[in-house]
Length: 477
Image 1 (tube, rainbow, N blue to C red):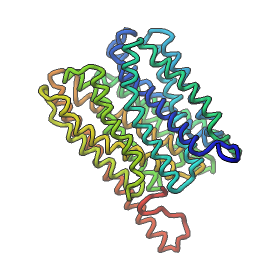
Image 2: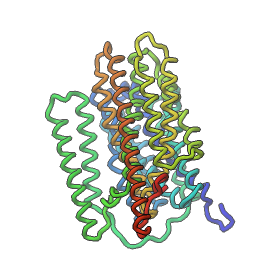
Image 3: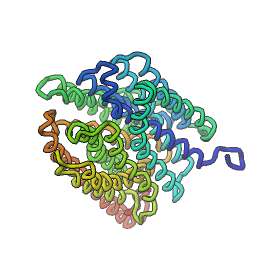
């Protein structure tokens, strides 16, 4: 507490980062448990795909909407609600040993995690409005992303082996409820908001379009020679087009769209969004498949797979905290992070059946360094590239791009690797070339946005600075 009796900004940052940590542990739990879940739930290959993907459906559908709701009605309120929903989803998943109930529970967990992630970063922007304090706070938030991915699979695997598959979710549900209580005690009350209403058509369409997209990708992994995945993907494109039309029409009429099309005229917002998409399609997709390589290809156990994956994410934690000391603006850090992850992914090519686990270490460490820079910079630019009143929405938009990119990337990697054990190493090398290529293309695109910002700044100076311009180095961050 401060001397005035109000919660301190540091406490708010701690709660927001802790919430993101818990949400990411929830997210990685199914990956760590997939073998025991398949046995306990009697889940076949199709059900396993949905178990792994279902939380992403809730996240992708909910991030933008919950962020916009937080900006409109209160970020603390939405963050607390998200924590309670996260706990409810965790408890539902262990009530009945059936794949259908578990998948529904994972979708609910995704919706709760969406509110925690988007409004947590929005709360940080609220208590750390600008300057070095915000850079430090978003670096802490970025490190919590890596920490959740690093520690989650290890803890979940150990609890699963010692107590059974239900216990990780019971413990996580309890942590989420504690988080909700801490939100009330340690974060500032939501300030009075102006009148406004949520963009219901936009909220419905973004939820429908992202759900259709992920459903099409998941069903396609079982085979692309059927009509169903293509039908779902076509429907997703139509729904996404309708979403864009509704947003443009609402903005033209002076309303408050869920995602203002004017933001896409800002180079810092476009750069951050592209970087989020490239991060998901690149390094996150590659690392999501790494446990399968360790298990299916190198004969490692679930614990060994979790430890190796943890090497990547653990490396990212201190790097995210130290990234604020880099003499680069947020957009330039995105370029650097994507470039370094590409180098790490290329170092993971050429794995074969005689490779030991040590062969993976250099690539995982380098990819972890790049991911740490990205986690810090993405958190920073997600809220810096939008007006302050839309910080939670900015977080939601950026993380939506990241999780949709992850779904697309995992699908591409699974196609490249294939299902034949004999081809896993060749397929893995092809997948690493693909994800590294996506990272490089993302870096080039973000670099283009940096040039766009510089040209805009020069034009603004030539016109006498009559309009708000972006810094050529830092964007609006």
